[in-house]
Every structure is written in structure tokens, then in C-alpha cells.
Length: 155
Image: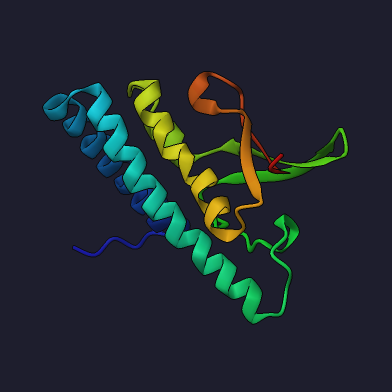
């Protein structure tokens, strides 16, 4: 039987599967190896994953002759699934994510375990340009109404 579903629904299904996969890997690691070892391994994997994304972004920017500034970091989230806007606050550009399909799936998951995935943002920026870091000002997984992220120069 062939489902005739929209591109958006196909992407939503794929994102849900990715979220479920992460949840089961993370929970299995925690159950089998204990919380501390699981956290260490999850962060290691997330930093490898985010590092690859950040290096790819770096290569794209450099190939276009662009400086490795936050403004030149290519947007890497799909345009379907996430609801993201940008606002200016206190002289900074803040990304506001009001819908994250991954966080939506992880509402019943241990929030600390779920939030480890979000370190992908720091890993991406570190690999793109280690002079900058992503800061999470708010996170849906912490009960905030949205995720608020800003890139700042490291001090």
C-alpha cells in the first residue's frame, strides 16, 4: 500500500523517527552503563555529530570566500518541522525556536538526558569557528516556552 502524503508529513515522520532513535540509544546507554558513563558517551557522540556539521558549514563559508562569523554560518535546520524566528535583544541577534519536533517527542523523556542532544549547537559552532560559542538562553526541554539561542564571542 502506498501512502500519498505530503512532503511536510514525510519530513515530520523522519524527524519523529530520529527523535525516537536518540531517546532509545540514550536511555539504553544510561540503563546499561549508568548515568555518568552514558552522559559522557552521549556528549562524545553529540560533539562528533555537531563537529561534522560545523566543519561542513566552515567549508561552505570558506569556499564562498566568507569570513567565519556567526552571520555567515549557513542555516542548517530544515525549513519544515521547526518554527524559528530571529529577534534583536540587547544588541544581540537571538534565534527563537518555538517549535522543535525533537523536543516535542521528548516531553516524557528524562529532561537532562534529552537536553544532552542540544549540545549539538555548541559543537557546531566550536567546529565552525572556535572563537564563538552558542549560548542557550532558554530551552523547551527545561520547560521554557521556546528555545532562545545566541552566538557570542568567547572571552
